[in-house]
Length: 192
Image (cartoon, rainbow, N blue to C red; front, top):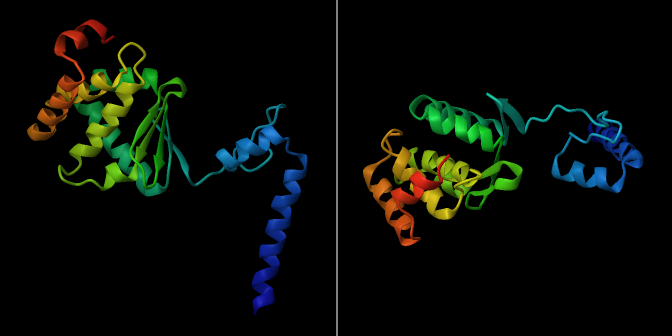
């Protein structure tokens, strides 16, 4: 019984290991970072491009498990419905949404990437409002003209009422932004 289940496993591992023989060190690093999507210099994939951890919605490349992807699609649809102007600005500046376990959320503006941390998903004091505000916050960081921390917090003040965020959370974001010296005048001057 054990040998019958072990043989396919050994065969699969040996096939995977033999495919690394042709991969350059740079391509190997890409394979580690982005499993199953290595593209060689000739432009042909060396491994299958089917990855259960990646999906796409309306031009967004969403990296995470099925639960995370469905959560992001649900909230992106909500943002698009209630704040279409912000949604289209965000799509202009960012294209990748990732998931990280055990950390806070962060943005990589140069790469047009936001990463939503599991800690923010698990924070349920305001229900889904915190996750929506986090998505808006991190997407604002990717804004080329107005992506600082003050602006990212102020985005919750500007878009919060339209997104129907809890008023206490909007006041919290406003206070944190004002503490950083941010105001509506700065927003009006810098936001494009």
